[in-house]
Length: 91
Image (cartoon, rainbow, N blue to C red; front, top):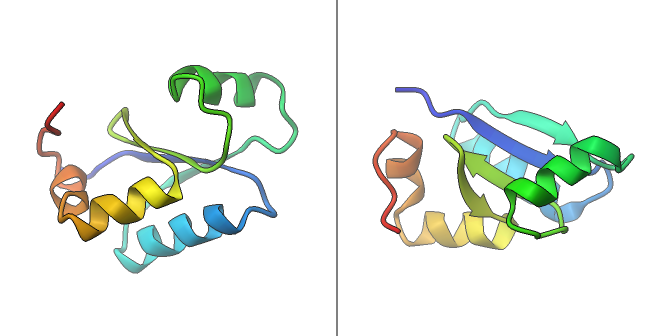
């Protein structure tokens, strides 16, 4: 199964670049959603992210991973690869 990865970003965000870099190194395709202009896309991100307003906000198969630090923590803990492989995430 190929994971669906969505990442809400802004062009000048260093954390966004770091998160995209990790995903790229792992050969993971992702959809980047630029929310720099605000509006409906940013509102959708905040709603999906449980009120979090910072970027990036990262989703894998509709599971909210969180931001860049959360993505790297998941990788360090060995949880990113199983999530990308479609395994269930413990709640």
